[in-house]
Image (cartoon, rainbow, N blue to C red; front, top):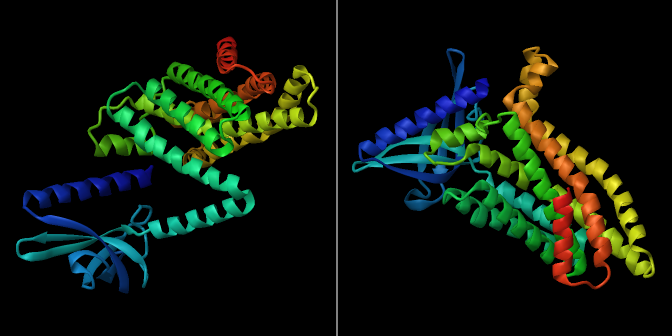
Length: 373
């Protein structure tokens, strides 16, 4: 909480300073630089670095500049700058020339690109061509979120419509890219859509019952503070829950479908009931690990809050009644229930789809399963 307050105050001061500078007709440039010298000065218990850096781009490329960087413990600017570190600096100019230089942040994108390259290499080494297609599917998923979901929300569309459309597009694109237009991918798509819709409806229903407004998270507070967007923040929370568990549901659905189609290929005369039971049996093992994955992932994201509540010696009842923790519980349980129900839905669809069937008949089967759920 203290860290959040410090960050918000720092952000406010930064925005106010920019507004005042713009009012005075100043120009701001955000440029990359590399630290060439640094010296730390301690004064009244506070540490301040005097940093000399060389600009790496723009009209000031090669120019050496100097700025001070105060180390505020517990804040996002508590970063000790060292020699050869790449940073972003903001240069303020007016008609007479350079006014000031300020530290903005550390350059991180090149390390992200390195990690992305490592991820891609291992994906291709161990996954082959299918691993490459998986990487393409990841990229297309990001495009769907940036080019479909976010523009729909910003244009004022209902979060339910935006989330449904985006989830369906992501699901279809992912499975078609990875497995092609096959009966197995079609079974996985329908099973995923069933489980995802159920998870989303559960999140909305119980979230509304608990009066989770969606503005308690730090990231949501930043969105409210720094923008004037008219967004349904509660709906945005539900969209995040639904799309966030989509990957786990797709994983379970594809696993169940793959098992059923593999068994059918090895034993062509096997009965549909046996295929369904085999898919559900395998799904139980996957269910145990995937639901645990979801819960641990969301619990890990809540560690700072949990430590705060532990420090304050709050009771278990008080903790689960806080809006932040309740939202994470809804997120975890709705996703887990979606995974659980995806298993029988996918098993039924895949078992009937191992034999050549009409597409619309299969689609109707998926809709009936969703309706009965």
